[in-house]
Image (cartoon, rainbow, N blue to C red; front, side):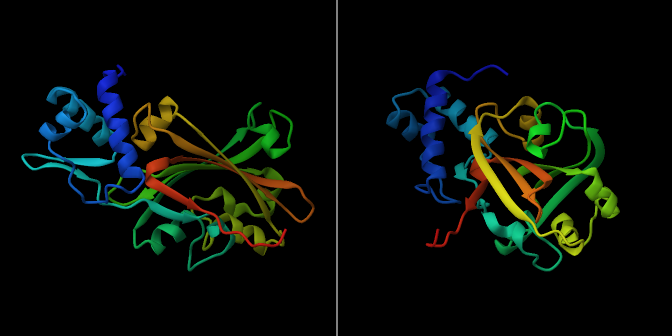
Length: 249
């Protein structure tokens, strides 16, 4: 994909910052092309390219003969602890999305794979160990996907809980099935940021220069054994991750 002119990219970055930081509210109209050209000392064709970049990133809607409007759908505000409790039939992403009044979707595929050099250390298993992979694309209806979430489960746990091989694992999903089987789970999560890979750009419908959060979550049982690992790739401007802490240490 050819890179946009540097001036157009700079203008789109400046406007994107105003949108993401809340200076421009959802539904607000951006200044006209003429006003933006004057404000950023650029010609209108450059401003037009900048607005197209914002539209490709899902930050604005280009309204024919009306102007440019900040995307009205708010980010999904997700509590980091939403996987620790079952609400109705759901845990995780669905809980937070529904709390925001949105209608979530999940597309799931399930397969047995070999853990490669990158994955095996996360699971504390030798490379080449066969594990169950549950790959999901998640979002809210009417909007591009918010995240991919890929989970790997060690096979002795899968043998104990065969329903994990099904797309639908039942109310509360995988973690409820682990609890029912007697596992007491503790979670550990690490968060980093990077630019998306080509496949992620296609799946999440984002541009090559749009940052994503990457989260690795390990689930330990009562014996401190890793029983499951999840890797999430989240579009930063479509998602807000909230952590709540106590004062005791």
